[in-house]
Length: 251
Image (cartoon, rainbow, N blue to C red):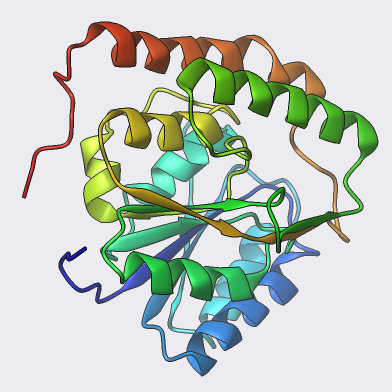
């Protein structure tokens, strides 16, 4: 497997009212990537915060050149914030990561290493050997496993953690699956499913997730319904009816 060597890793982090979590999450991520000599930029998108998130980010950026805080001044929403960050990244690969330090920054290093083997996408799973989910609320965990099983059966894929936002892509993938429709948390399934349906290569690696220590979770259980179902059926229709019109163009 061969591909163009990667030069810069962008980490896109959507953040809304995360003043308590960001100092630790960004600092630990930056330190880990520095220790592993990974060239990087950290694009944190302030998505309409009403606390001091922007003040925290600008203060940290003054001491950390790799940190690039941006403000989403348009309509807010998890999916919109991620798209805002993706449109402003300069790297040739990207990891989408949560602001609350629930994702392990050491897994970002694993993602970078696998991408550099020539894979187009790397999808983490908390539910394979070597992975783990710590302090996962039982109701959200139950709904998560049911919906991920639905996705596996619908698309006949082995990935069992599609709904997790924490994934990595080459820039060519992001360009190849645009335009992105999802404006909310359903972006977490649109990106990987479109990439798979359109023929991009992917690998699964075990990751560790820990429930947030600061702030309040932004995902509401009610959003696990119609928006997720819509985007799944949208991509399934592409897979079933498009006859490969949007398939990855061979290099």
